[in-house]
Length: 331
Image 1 (cartoon, rainbow, N blue to C red):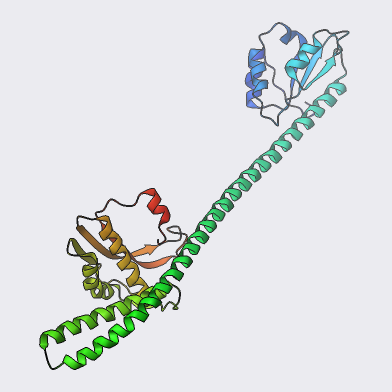
Image 2 (image 1 turned 180 degrees about the vertical axis):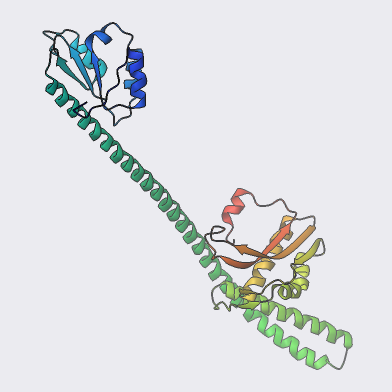
C-alpha cells in the first residue's frame, strides 16, 4: 500500500506457516485466529528457527497485552516470542510504525546472520589452519627425530669406518708387496693375491660410502647414467645377496640421466638389496626397476614438478611390521 508494505492474507494457521516458510518480514495475527486453533505447526516452525532468527509478530487484540486485562497475553508471549500487542481499534499510522519497526528488526537479524556466517567461516578457517600447523609441527618433530637418529648413526658409522680403514691400510700394503714379489712366480698365488687386492679395493670403496653416509664427506652430485650404474653394480649386488637370490635388473630404454651422488646412490641401492635378501631367508626373486616418472604440482609436495628417475627394489618377502617401519630411517 502507500506505506510500501506488501501483504498476503491467509485463512488459517496452517496456511500462515506455509507462507512463513516461503519467507516474510513479519506476520500480523489476530487473537481470535489463534485462540482456538491447533498451533502445533506454528510452534514447530518457531522452534526450528536458526539461532540468528527471532521472527516478529504483531498480535491484534481487543484487550491489549497486559495480564490484568488479557490473561491470555502470557500464553501468546510464550508461544510467539517476539510479539507486539496492538489493541483494536488503532490508528493506521500506529500500525505502520509498528510494521516498519518489525521490518527493521528483521533486517538486523539478517545482518546478524551474515556476520554469524562470516564468523563461522572464520572459525572453520582457523580450525583448518590449526590442523595444518599441528600436522606441520608433528612432521617437523618427526623429521627432527629422524635427523637426530641419522646423526647418531652417522657418527657411529664414521667411527667404525675410520677404525676399519686403519686396519685395512696395512693389509692392502702387504698384499701389494706380496703381489709384486709373486707376480712372475707362482701363477696360482698371483691370482689369489690379485683377487685379495680386488676385494680390498672394494672394501675401500665401501668405506668411502660409509664415510659419506656419516656426513664426513660432501655429496658429489653429478649427472648419473642409472642404467650404467646398475649394470656396474650387478656383481657386487649378486655377491652381497648370495646365490639363493635371483637378481633381475630392469631399466627403461632411453632412461634420462639423474642428478645424484653415485656413491651415495650405490650405497642406498646395496642396503635395500641386503634388506630384501634378509626378508627372503629361503631365497626368491629380487628386481631392481628404473623408470622415468613425471611429477606434477600436486603429485608430491616434497618434490618440485618435473621429470625424475624412479628406482624400485622389489622383493617377495613378508614386508615390515609396524614396529620395524617406525624404526626405518630411510625413505
